[in-house]
Length: 135
Image (cartoon, rainbow, N blue to C red; front, side, top):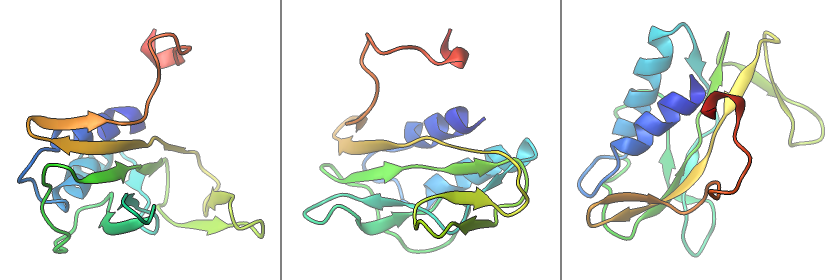
């Protein structure tokens, strides 16, 4: 589910698309399948500062986050949960658990908006091992 909704969100990216549309694509797909999208973590713009604007929200929203334009670089990295979207961070400041103990999955790409759409800047090589769902 997570991989599919992440790919669907990437597929809408192109010049002129509003950033807030990404969250709607993700939330509509996961809710229809009985899952939730974490709301307190987000993707982000990438520039001279690595974590910069705009925040890329992975849930439906009406926030004015801006419009994609050629040369924009950002991440889409939804965390999709089997149960509640609530979570808790452990004392190590890195590990996050779902509040109800159910499973969660996350995928991430750094993306570049091009004149013709979107280009992933991160990802697997053709020689990389395949995941079980890719076989």
